Image 1 (cartoon, rainbow, N blue to C red):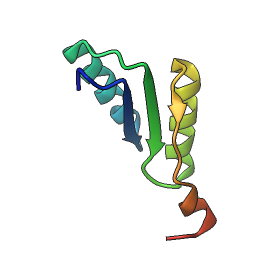
Image 2 (cartoon, rainbow, N blue to C red):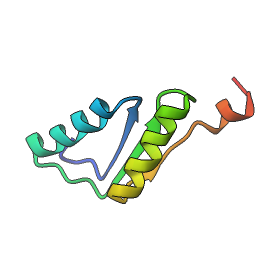
Image 3 (tube, helix red, strand yellow):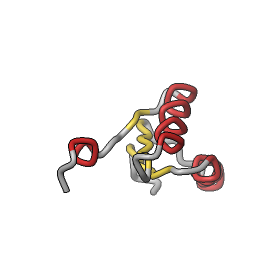
Image 4 (tube, rainbow, N blue to C red):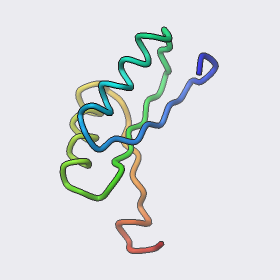
Length: 71
């Protein structure tokens, strides 16, 4: 983890964001890029990821194939 300059973390609930922040604080890791990916296509998971990315200047990662209906 200390060698990583990018982190992608799946989120569905606020506790997932908090766990990631705790991990950064615990390890002292401060990656250059953090990507949040909604675990599901639920509006709440997507909104949480978008809002958190905007607030923290992180990036959003979505699984486009799910929105296009391609398995």
